[in-house]
Amino acid sequence: MDADAYIRKLRYRAGHRGTREADAMIGGFFESYHHEWNADDFVWFERLLEEQDVDIMAWALGTALPPEDFLGPMMERLCRLDFIKLPAGLKAQY
Image (cartoon, rainbow, N blue to C red; front, side):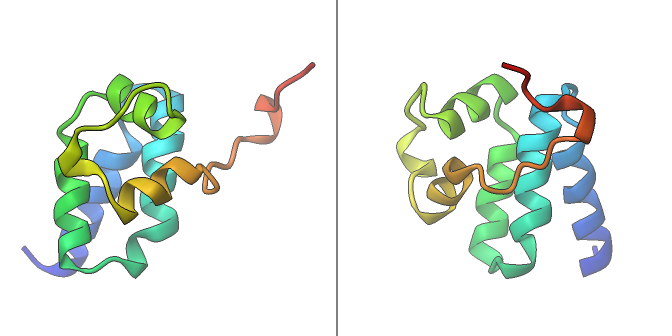
């Protein structure tokens, strides 16, 4: 598979998870950082995409500990959540 097709495949899988929250979290992470990743980071991300969204979101939010093989710089970056951009109409109202 050529590089462009590979990126398109990952972009689709990351941004079409089934819920807006997962799309924003996982898709936003991919869009913000994939251009900086090396081959090992892409392998890590592909493994992450095989996990359940509720688990990924819990790990990123810090409400559950990720499995040991997901620990490291990629998970630390995911947990920052500094890449999520909500549409204008979805801002929290307190």
